[in-house]
Image (cartoon, rainbow over all chains, first blue to last red; front, side):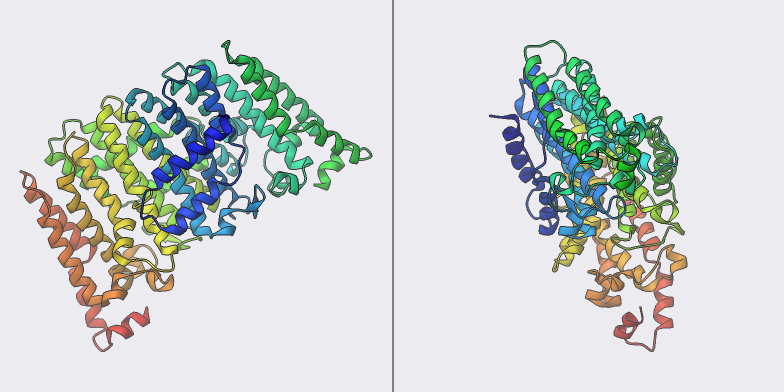
Length: 304
Length: 304
């Protein structure tokens, strides 16, 4: 079974279990809309891949950890899309939760997903109390204060923020949680796996900045040009587009080199390279540069 | 030390610990604004009172459980006050979080407080893994799907909802979690304590409906007449004002009668009676009825 299939099956099973019976139907529908929407599922797959490299001796716990990471990610997307932040109408080619349902339901769906992430862990982890504690602590670090994704998002509200610190928290924190969770699910030390998550997370944030400039909305499934519009810190703005792409390539190399020696190393390197190509397709970059060959980089950015 | 003092000290200690070092300062300030604002702290006090009745052999765990309940309550208030819901400008006589800071920070402060509640539990519970599991499960039931306060709030978004089910979830769920948490912190069975929480929680919701009609904004520290304005299910509307007050008195009697036989029974009964008088002061009711003596109940409600 592919890691993506395993992720989708686990999400489906754990979501239904954790939602229980008798909840307000619109809330459940809004939460389902947020979760089952064709996401890339990179965080849970990363968790599962690391767990496989660590023996995966408690696969149900691995699945729960993977699901809880994805639920947290989905919760953050629902809240980030709301009018208070990006005011985005589309996500993954479909209406965002507040557009498809309502703002109150989007607010509650995000809250509900955060709590559901913990519930999934609690339900699955009862057989492994020590691992459960470490996994929940790890999840909490990836999301909460001081350096989780909620804190990362909040750096956008500060008058000044260090770009690296912002990116590490906004995206990197949950990637680090994902690779660490793979090891923790197997009762193994998470530290050797943290750098892989950190480099990959930073690469994702840089890729997001790049795609916000070069992709068109149809490819991305959401509006482009949002960073400039919202005056957010962006690698593409800080380094220029070519500089950002070079930085992305370097981060991907560092991620691949950070994979600890293990029998799954080649497989994990392939996963990283495949994700890199999916995130910032070479063809898309080339097409963009050809189309804007007569403009300076400054003009290109101004045009978006 | 009074339970209120113990609550405030525990909140202060655990908040600082769980916020850590290096979080975005505005986010921390917004979360502090939400938490340290003169709330009645009834849920943590209830948890501590039940723990005292159960022996309170792990007071640090009790404190953490009490704090986590209050953090969840504060998170729900921050999100409920936002424009997507009540659009309230004042809470406890001060600007609401989105007014004092911003909508983005209010959204993130609520998210951050939910995660912080779990972090507080994890930090304090490492010595008591079995009790910790039960406490986190209990907290999760009080907040999440299917019957926690997030679900309760979401019933407002349904076209039809059973008033009792709505009130049990919106307010009752976290009160039940509070009384249960007091027993669970001591490793004791929570079930005998659930009815006290359930009756008291329902009484609080009814009191809220009553106060929304009879109190003035200066006394309440927040706008009145919100239920009618937002067409929310309300006991005062369903039963009339006098009916709602009678229902409230009955629920308080049931709460007092539900306290299990223990050496703290009289003390707990006093706590319940004191809260009842604080919530729906007899003098306030009398004053209201005298001022509106010439109006029918229908007119009274229409006037608000």
